[in-house]
Length: 103
Image (cartoon, rainbow, N blue to C red; front, top):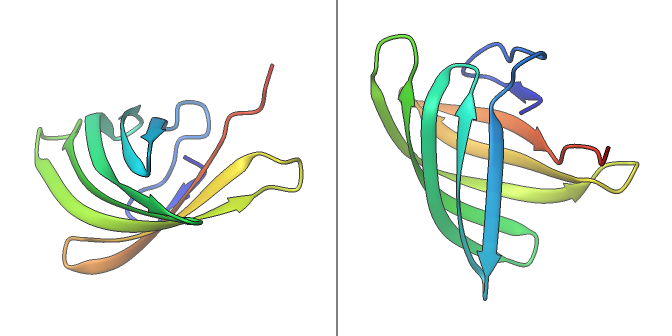
């Protein structure tokens, strides 16, 4: 995760996401930063991903659920970037997740 409107992203230990896709179905998980762990499922149509998610906050163990839509983009160096639009705490949110550069 590169940025998020719901929390300050720790650049040394950001949340890390792992995505899988088969025949337009999307699923995966994430952990790190402010989240103990999270899971998501959804669909991809063209350059748009729609998911439902659930995660547990490190701070107090609160379970958070929601839905979101992401637009797939490419960075200047060809990595995948997801610009995620979702609602949390009753407000629209935005986060950006980028593929980790190859070592």
